[in-house]
Amino acid sequence: MYKKQWTGFLCLDIEKRTDKSVPKDVFYYNALKVQRPIYHNPLRPCYYILNLGGGYLNGDTYRLEISVRKNAELTLTSLGATLIYKTPTTPAYQETEILLEENSYLEYLPDPIIGYENARFRQRDTIYMKKGATLLYSDILTPGWSAQGQSFMYKLLHLTTKIFMEDKLVVFDNIKLEPEKQEMAALGYMENYTHLGTFIVISEKSTKEFINLLQTKIDKQSGDFKTGISSLTVPGFAVRIMANMTQDIQRIISTCHTLLNEKWYANTTNSLRKY
Figure 1 (cartoon, rainbow, N blue to C red):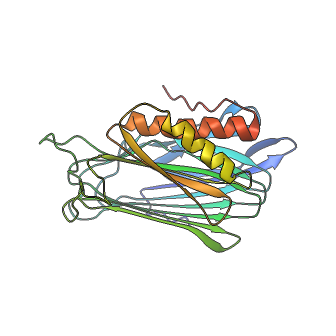
Figure 2 (figure 1 turned 120 degrees about the vertical axis):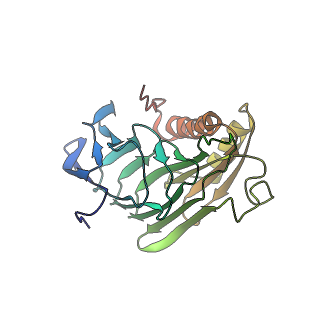
């Protein structure tokens, strides 16, 4: 769906050749680009997304198209946080469309989205999965610095995620934080926390026993946070995390990621170190 007026556009298509996943097509335009892949895992490329503009401004629009072909694997993250600056008239907008073919594997683990004072941002992610595909997906929302030194000075952070398995909608996640219209500290909203994290996993390897083990592992973590885990209608689960520090959310997601690698793949390597 490439069109020249996108502030940033990225298309990434990964396929399996012999025993290794490699890029079939990489195309980007304007403010988005990716670095050359790094192989933390010798068979799986890891791409880092860069925003050349440094942040999202009034009326900016971005689109990402990600395809992981049959039996291929991909790790995708960002080189830094997504910074949403003041948007006086038109929210910044980003949409991502992901295709996961049979037995493919995707880790989509971007850095936090930071909403600064008077920022408005809408994100729409749509993911289409085929049988046997595995998805690891995360989002982190945090308030940015304001001149008043207060949290929740952004106007709107609205994230919508839809995940389809064999064309059937299996996950619909709708997060809308609008501080001027919501009692952010109230029960059912942020409950005196300022940061919100989500970690969604869909895999045929997921079991009730693993989810229970993961809950026990999370409960042993230190820090001021609150979490909840929900099973999905397909094999998989969603973890929601509320905290007052980005590091606490990142640690919980890393704990989930590490345990998953240990139990499912006998692998403890999951570092996406960027600096």
